[in-house]
Image 1 (spheres, helix red, strand yellow):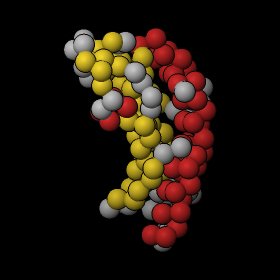
Image 2 (image 1 turned 90 degrees about the vertical axis):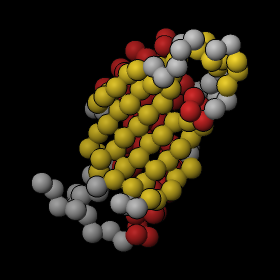
Image 3 (image 1 turned 180 degrees about the horizontal axis):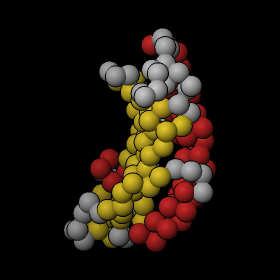
Image 4 (image 1 turned 30 degrees about the vertical axis):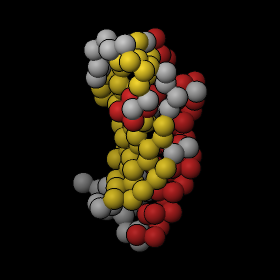
Length: 140
């Protein structure tokens, strides 16, 4: 088991803010502490024939927590992608040492077809943010 990092709340908040800036999203610190970052995409979708801009479709989410004494943390990511983008995102993440942990749908009769992808890594949060940003850059 790794030793928990001894960082102040202020240091954790600064790290979280930097994590969010790299990913281009809004960051917040929740109890734990957990750094949670959200970023909206610009997917143009319909579900059941109706246009949607719902955060349930548009939002990307990233987090880190359980920071250890070596500066590594549990880092997580999630986004919706069009079905034809799945393989490219898997390849981008894997070549950067990030594990893809889930690929699934949420909706029926959406157009174009959406898949939700989740990934994880034990990494320095800043390195994870940079690797993730590079991996998802092609999504626009």
